[in-house]
Amino acid sequence: MKHDLKNLLKPWINIIRTYKITGITSDSRKVTSGYLFCALQGTKCHGKIFIKKSIKNGAIAILCETKQIKYHGYITYTEKKIPIIYFFELSQYLFKISSRYYKINEMLTLIGITGTNGKSTVAHMIAQWSNLLNHKIGIMGTLGNGTYNNLKPSKNTTESPINIQKFLKKMSIDNIRTIVMEVSSHGIIQNRVSHLYFSIAILTNITSDHLDYHKTIENYIQAKWTFFSQNNIKTFIININDTIGKIWTEKLPKHNTIVISIKQQFNYSSFKQWIYANYIIHEKDYTYIYFKSSWGNGLLKNKLIGYFNISNLLLAFATLLELGHSLSHLINTCKNITTVFGRMQLFKAPRTPYIIIDYAHNENALKNVLKTVRKMCHHNKIWCVFGCGGNRDKLKRFFMGQTAKKIANKIILTNDNPRYEKPIEIVKDIIKGCKNKKNIYVILDREKAINFAVINAKICDYIVILGKGHEQYQIVKNKSYYFSDHNIVKKLLENKYDSDIY
Image 1 (cartoon, rainbow, N blue to C red):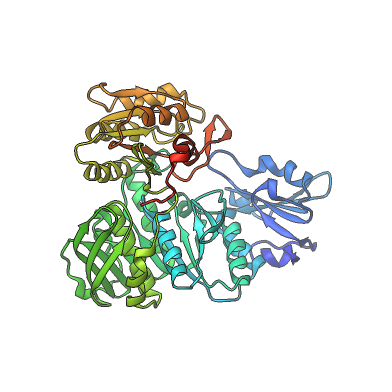
Image 2: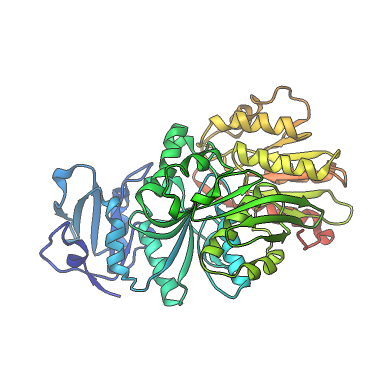
């Protein structure tokens, strides 16, 4: 696939010479012969520091982002006559440039999901449920990019505009017309989804997170709102049990908005469509959700754990109904939906405690998981194994410690991607939130921490391992080392491990 750089840059920049581009990327490691390398201003450094590496790898031209409009269109040349073309606020135009390169002609149905918690769960519920109905959907998000049960690792929750276009092109070639995409606050602010047309945009919930990047909760909320207010979106699906979601329904066009609610009465008549779960029964193996909706009434029988997963399920349910799937078919297949990898996964073997692995890495998610487990284990003990990431939002450490201490019986503080911070200092920040230090253990080696919990917990106790979920690495300084909570648990349970997750 070759394209003329001159045509890719019109009308923003006019260049005289023709450069035949064989590829386009903002990652110098992926540059090969004939590529256009886009050097963007990142959060930590500017991509221009990788220009030499990209040229060494075969770049034929460089687009370099500048924040000064006077340099827009300015061209310099390297010793090898490689042009460095300066582009004012390139990140805002990168989507249009890359869309010209990949030329996706088919109409695709894009579903964007944003929110603090639940994005991956809702995305994979939609894909899995659709798969049960013999309709394959593409997925882009935290757990990887691809199709259900066939994912390749992703670099970010929301990829760069170039990678999004590349993925959409691949889906188009593979005759997949529906794609569900997780949309992060970082991705919104950094223009990664600008100019995309979304058939459906979903809000799961909004609580405090990523304040190391956004600085204030107001900025974080505004970032999420930008996705709904400035993108081209046909239909909104909102969880109105969430405070922010309920407020936003007053600002969104009601004739384009679908709302889901759990045990919360609302004036549904003014909305495009609605689902109201009015009665819920939790049993050992299943949760039963009795609902009323504008599509009809019924019962959703499912194996998912946690009250918060009810809203996730209803959001997926509303999405698939909006896409045109039959109400009766969705009801009949709901019971076959399995837990999303790294999200409230329950492991149990003979003569071992119950073990739950979840990705919860902020206060609200941690609280939801522990409150759910408290209802499950009754008077038995909860062992909570968790840590906090280094060089990230430090404010949440206090509140995560405070919440864990209120609900769990035993707390084991350990490493969770310490990066450049001293692990013991991260732990001290968490402990500050604990009123007393009784039954708090500090075991920085995460494998030893999990080991300690499994050895010392009783058979009826619950061990909740939080923070990493699907992740298969531990980040220390700037290096990633292989590490998997799942594999550690399986190794500990050995032959006792029961592969059924229920």
